[in-house]
Amino acid sequence: MTNREMLLIPGPTPVMDSIYDALAQETRGHTDPRFAAIYRNAIVRTKEMFKTDGEVFVIAGSGTVAMEMALVNTVSAGEKLLVISHGYFGDRFIKLGEAFGIEVDVLQAEWGKQVAAKDVDSKLETGNFKAVTITHADTSTGVAANLDALIPVIKKHEALVILDGVCATAAMEENMSKTYGSPDAKIDIVLTGSQKAIGVPPGLAIVAFNKTALAEREKLNHVPAYYCDIHNWIPIMNDPQKYFATPPVNLIYAYDEGMKLVLEEGLENRYERHKAFGKAVRSALSVYGMKALAEEEVAAATLSCILYPEGMDDAAFRAALAKKGVIVAGALAHLAGKAFRIGHMGNTTVEMLEKAIVLIGETMNELGYPVDPAKAAERFKELSFVKGV
Image 1 (tube, rainbow, N blue to C red):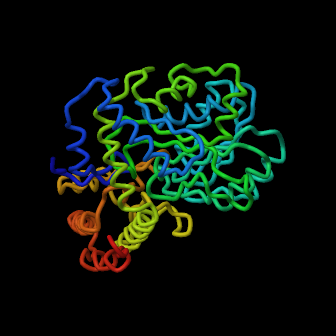
Image 2: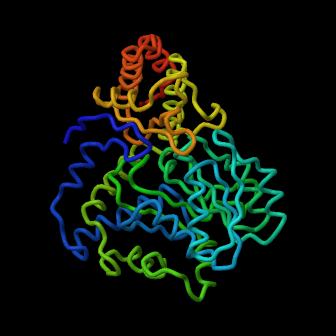
Image 3: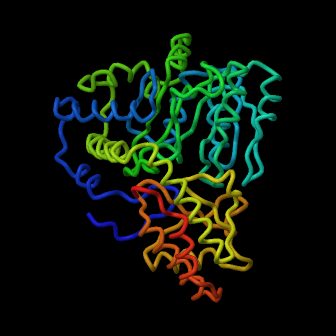
């Protein structure tokens, strides 16, 4: 199946033909040993990506389901949760925590900025926080969290690190075996979805727990969940022929193929490619007088929030660009109408992004903003090169 449009939004992202082919395979029973073998393989590949010493869960659901699974299995009503928010999706943990009676405190960065580690340290000094959530790359702002600075501080206070990798997994390092300054300073939980940098259609919630996080679940007598209780899923993750709730058979086919492509490219190669693409896209768009909300040193590798030149009509710009086959997303909250968001992750290619840069320039010219698409494309080519890509 050929993609008719360049879907350069924060997710879903472009899907490779081999993934579509896998998705289109014959649907089998969810306990069929042929399906179970594929499901088992997908789980093994997920463990390899996260390098966890615990369990991974690949189930039907959205990133929000993954957030809920991470939270309810580790933090009880009345316990304290610190939310480190770099934008709209970091804030989602506030409502999630409150829904389960968790005492939520928040450190919110100015949009486009990072929360400082010293502020996290000061906040954690004020009480016994059970866990801290970090959005690795916030989809609303294009800001990346500084894990090297944050994780040692959080672990000094003996809190769990819950990392929201929805817009980062498979594009930015999320190595759960990596230590950040001390042997015990590790990521405890990573949660994500299938539809962003992994490059598979939406519909899968993916969560990885290390042994520390699994031990916290064992301390809880009861969790306010049934579908999201990991106790119900561990037997299935260990033996996919067992049954708890029906998995999305065809999506698992597609996910297994997607994970195969991720690991064949190589995680380090993938991280470098995304880093180069992000820098190249932002620099090329700056040729048009467009500025990224996040400064380069805090910018995510997976997507960018781009501020318009003064007076540009957001709706007209995105509609005209869509007619050329390039789909970008509007901005959220107070930035609505003032910026657009462009994804440069997953299965996007050099050719795809270069073409998008040119078409953005042509669209600006049509709307009365004279720019030089050739110059922007040349800037993109200079910065996007990664050996092997």
